[in-house]
Structure formats: structure tokens, C-alpha cells
Amino acid sequence: MKSIKKKIVITGGQGRFAQTLKHYTKLNIYYPNKKELNILSYKSIENYIKKIKPKYILHAAALSRPMNIHDKNIALSINLNIIGTANIVKACEKFKIKLIYFSTNYVYPGKKGNYRETDPLLPINSYAWSKLGGECSVKLYKNSLIVRLCMCEKPFIHKYAFSDIKTNFMFHEDFVKIIPKILNKKGILNVGGKIQTIYDFAKKSNPMVKKKSGKKVFPPNPSMNISKIKKFI
Image 1 (cartoon, rainbow, N blue to C red):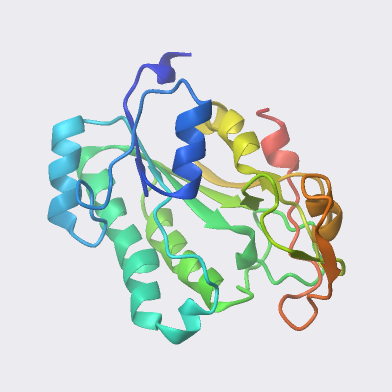
Image 2 (cartoon, rainbow, N blue to C red):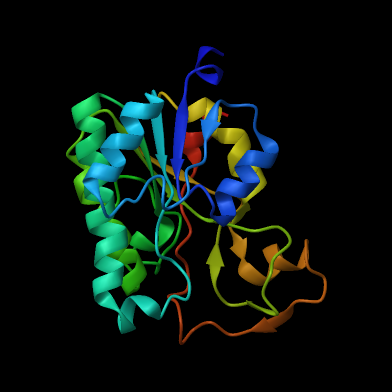
């Protein structure tokens, strides 16, 4: 496909997902570190764009773990996930770059599961609120795609997995395969795997994982309907 030769920049170029992307893809991707591209500095973003001249930006840079950091340090959460994203959007609009924003399935209420892209939103924690804040600025820019993701590293890295919480995790490697097929899509896409308990998903790659209840941490079912993305893959 033509897009393979076109330049792509991924923010958060030294992050967990970016490193997986670098290992598994043949796309023409640039992986700037924080000094090369600082999402908190519009000038930094602009300078890097002028230097590389990308066709696409994958906006993966974000504050995620630990989840409670978004309660303890809201300034950092706002700066990185909302203001940083807004800076990226403004730069993409100025230089007419296609933007793909990595959001989260946690923007959905998490009670009934199987949420479609058009369903009402009610973020389940402060992290998800910060990602929805990023979505708001991305949505103002028409040449964009919001990807609501449910993914993690392989193998499942935690000692415990919730046996009473359903979602649809997929591994980083699986999402990498999807990226070339959605580069030119616009709007909002749910992206994830099969709907199952987190424990059932985790034990396939980590047989030593132990069961744990997640009822006090998460609502029972923040899973997404992925019928729309299946049309492309």
C-alpha cells in the first residue's frame, strides 16, 4: 500500500507500544524521544514537523500508569493527556497532517458492555476522563481518527487478573497489524479483541496469573463492540 512509504511520526516514541511497533512493522515510522518532540511545547512539535514533514501522526504519548496518578497529580494528567493532545491537534491542523489518536475503552460507562462508538460516554476513572479530554480536541479536527483501544503487553505482566470483569483486551502486536488498514479512516473506531474476563485473557499468555476480584476497582463490563473495525480487517 502507498501509505507504507509515507512518513509517519509516533509521539511517545520511546514508550512500550512504540517499541513493539518498531519491532513488528515495515511502515516508515519516526520515533522521536521527549527531547526531539515535547508535546507540552507547541514550538517543539512544530519544529519536529517542519524537519520530518510527516503525512501522519500517531498520538500515543500519554500518562497512563499508575492509574492513581491521575487522582494524585491532576496537573500532570491535564498537561500530558489534554493540553499535550490539544497541542498536537493544533499542529496537525496547521500542517494538514492526518492524526490518529489513541484513546481508551474506559471512556464508556462499563456497566452493560459491548459498547458501540455511538453509545453515550461516562469515563470510569480519572485516567479515562483525561483521555476523553484529549478526544474533545481531536474531534474538532476533521482529518482525524480516534481509536478507543483495549490493549496490553504480551505476555500479561501482572501477577493477578480480574475474574469478574469483562473486557476485550488485545496485545500490542495484534494492534500493530491493524494500523496500516486504518491510517486513512476518520471518525471513531473501537479496537480490541474477544470479549472475555480479564483472567481468561491473561492466563493464555501467563499461566501463572492468579484470580482476583475487581469489583471495587472497575465496573463489571467496559467491553466494546468491534463490528465496525472488523469490516476493515
